[in-house]
Length: 479
Image (cartoon, rainbow, N blue to C red; front, side, top):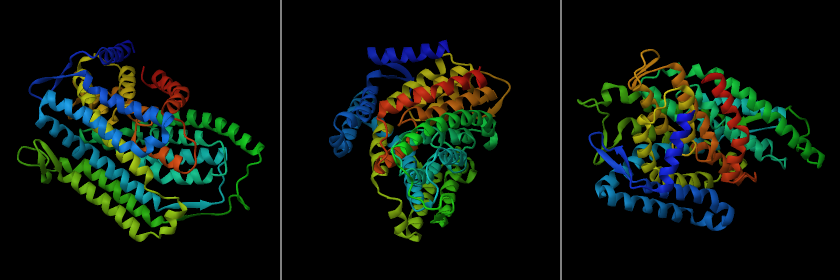
């Protein structure tokens, strides 16, 4: 733990003092100095996301694209000065083509398909019903991904609790569990585990994390039940009652055929991880083939197949579903538009921060499970958890262990791999930007009248309810 604290203290000190730079690996052959001040646009964008809705909400809502573009330019232009126009262009295109494009297409596909499924009935949002919904959604996340489960479950949960005044805590715990923790059991569940699978971690290895997930579920659901029961009693005391005549007697799902399109999207994600390893998709040098864009940037054929399949699933979902279902779901494009705008800025401006992480990762001396758990998790709370996971998995693979899980990056002990995986998946719940579905759930909740906490307000909830659970995880599983 001391090494972890030292590492973050060192990183924070560098950011505050803004020295000339940190030596990082360039293209793999030479070393290139990464000026720490190039991280300022990323920090500035995060600060805008956190503060602007509090001080100028209407202006922020109208001018998000302009603010995002400003921070992108403030990163790209100095980056081009330091590294050259060609390197800057290649970095931005690499980020957009190989990271952001598949990310936003997946979100778009799941958003569209889930919006065409509606669950209705006489179930009212009581503490017991909500516990069951969260438990089901958490387990579902490992089957169709945290994003898929979040998009499928968020509207029914909001609808069943629409009669209540005090309900923001329900969506906060929804983000904690359904949008993050539940994705730890399979490579389908969360992108970091898919990257591990692509590098030799067995597909079903993640089931080793089941005891950790069950441990966390028991604690989180117990706490949630009592928090929700207190809020529920206050709502009832104020005369609020659900509009149902015969509780629990009717329940039906419309648009159920869209499950086919959800499966189609899940299949596309799995194929994106499997196809690159097949010789049919590799050239003579063993590189994955694709469409050359610029420099070393290539849109690979497996990624293109994934994109086409997901967009086709979204198109067929809309064509085969009556628009009345979307109307009952209060379906609008606002949430996906906001996520698309904000995350293009986040993905591009965080590139210097990722370069620093890749440079520092192998040299910070972290080797124990508890250190890897906190380091991976803390950085995954603000950076993309997929590259963060890969940095620490690579670091673990170079430590020279002889026993454990054999990957293409080296042999990693089971306990160490578990710590890295749990850190990346679980701690994405610490902030709204830690995992893509977090912000999507917040946006949909806001659209439907749920008064979600601010950026810093949400972090306060995670500090109170999540961090103590992570401390228990460390003591029980990663010491």
